[in-house]
Image 1 (cartoon, rainbow, N blue to C red):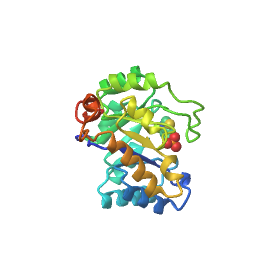
Image 2 (cartoon, rainbow, N blue to C red):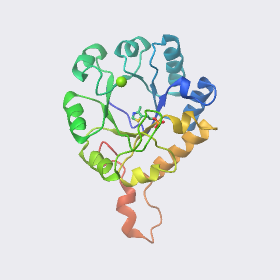
Image 3 (cartoon, rainbow, N blue to C red):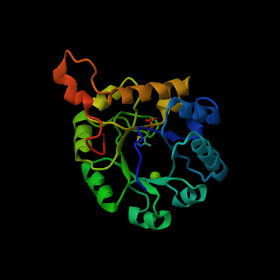
Length: 227
Ligand code: TZP
Ligand code: MG
């Protein structure tokens, strides 16, 4: 199944929400999140079904973390796997044509995920984040190198919020996956909207151009899978 042009991937863990989780998810969807991952350790079929229905109503694809069986049962669009989860090929047999995303932390892991048939990769951590216990992020040069090397859609992940996103955009990142930037926000809709606006601004072609020399860098929008 073709992987769509999603840019703002919400890692949805109900227990991490500052407010009511379902109100938070609804707000995030209104704010422009365009891919949602169900990220819950214990199997919660009812919760996953509820999140999937909300995503369906918003026309947003739904991915299940770690659990291919739950992905099939909920009718999810895909599953997301970490480096310690089952191999892509084995999961593909269960999932058929659904997407398989893989968490990666190096160019070697990106290459392996690509060869294994992944649909997209997560790459990080880009910044320190208590959400997954990372005390520091990767150097920006390493992120830029990963973006350059990656032939699949790449979602930067880890500690990303509106204030540090421009740094990643300058490194070539065009898609991000976030948890706390939205789930912990006082206003999750506004937080999602702001991230969307920053991501979108990076894709806008330069309009009237006194500084015409900057136009090519600003205008690139469809050059590679990362674009
Ligand atoms: N994988 C790498 S960092 C991370 C995951 C799941 C956590 C992302 O959450 P946050 O709150 O956006 O840092
Ligand atoms: Mg996992």
